[in-house]
Length: 424
RNA sequence: GGAGGGAUGGCUGAGUGGUCGAAAGCACUGGUCUUGAAAACCAGCGGUCCGAGAGGGCCCUAGGGUUCGAAUCCCUAUCCCUCCGCCA
Image (cartoon, rainbow, N blue to C red; front, side, top):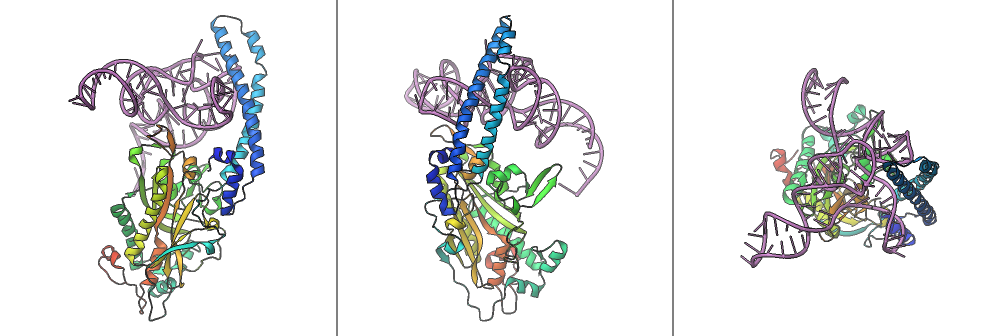
């Protein structure tokens, strides 16, 4: 959520900045609501002040043994007036809250203009796509040939957009997870974290998935409430600091977690239906950093390197792009995507996304630190990124490391995790 | 599933209808003392909203209710603890 103070002070300017994201901020509606709110709030607080003063007077009179009946008569209708004022104020405040909670984070100056992924800006490439002396197959064909990647059985078990892996491929998938976690913890200083795969509504509000993006989530009824399957570990991990005031000495907090992720993919029917690019359930190793505000841009650069390190160790060619305004997520001020080379599709596809949410999530989360310079609790900055999406990394390994015989060579970095096997 | 007990500021914890946004301790900040530090002593010290300011409102887990007035009484929910049962 944006800082209401800033929005109030410069609604036009905020609206201008949000245009980059393709978001039309309803300035007039907001200003109108704000004016109503201000007047109602002053009125209500005046009434509250009167009630408090008079009630204290009654208390004193009673203590002094005086007759309080006349005083009670004077305040007879005060309660009703106050209730009415409060109700009206609540309505306006709810409306304002609804409006404001639907407003995305303001993009950083460095975010390029643009409408969609076509306008994302490539900032670097690493590695060279391999030249095949045979026609490379995609991961679906490779998996079918070995029988170790099976979408048909998955649709029998559940439905579309799920997969079953068996044998060595399943092990390679698990090896990737271990490899990623070990790299992030041992080389990049993250703390390994195990978190719930279901979360409550407060957590999803904290990181911004709710109220706007509920249709992307799998809901789990529980008693008369609802839990949600996590769409990313960002949700449970970032919510660790919800309602906390973190000691300055503990910063930065750097967490990594491997979790499954569940996405309903509502609205993407027909997109990426072949293979395991876009599944309802996939594994991801996530990085989360909670930092003091002045450090978040440095942290973003650090985190993209942490994600790249995995691909470099696996020797998978990739490129890094800066998302343009129109492609930027709701809560993000700036996002880098890493796209890995997929010979089977003959193009780069997203495998990681690293974002600086600045104080946008922290405000909802009430995630704060005590700034030693001011002695006051102040909002933190939150960042997250995939390090990496495991399913997509697996298929990248399959496609880039395939042999003419349809086997998969095991990348050197993964061989220790595969019992020394060099090919599967 | 059954029976009890809890939830108060950064932390521990007192407070059972009125001057309580809340004792005390710890932590923290400043000062005195000291070569310096520690100790001791003195002082300060919750958050948030409106307001130029003066000042005012709100916040004692959350949501309702009773009352002129609620941290305090009532109801509901959530979470935590103890015991019994069940259990990977």
